[in-house]
Length: 125
Image (cartoon, rainbow, N blue to C red; front, side, top):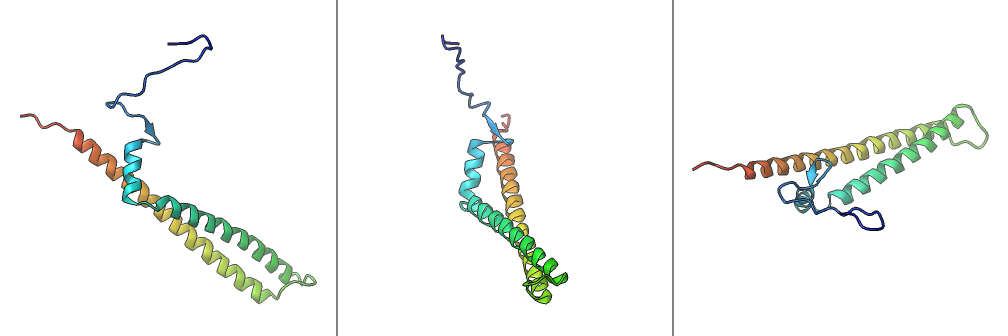
């Protein structure tokens, strides 16, 4: 029904037809959160760590370029290359942890959704 302001009101979705968020219901997402309560915190932490390592890599590459061209006041090239290697390893490690945790969450959501579909099946008498 519509009101004088032009706002449309809709009934809440039925329990038989739950609203989906990214292919999963809110109940399924909450169940996944119960199964792994700190997954989102880990995703934010390691995602931010990946970004931080990328930023450090950017500045390490700049220092290596300055050392390679003998720019005045530049750090020694071997120290800059060591720093680049450490930062590349940090980017790879943090990105791998983030990606692995994200995939584990998606697999857990798929398992929960499959369990919900199986639970809806009716066995005829």
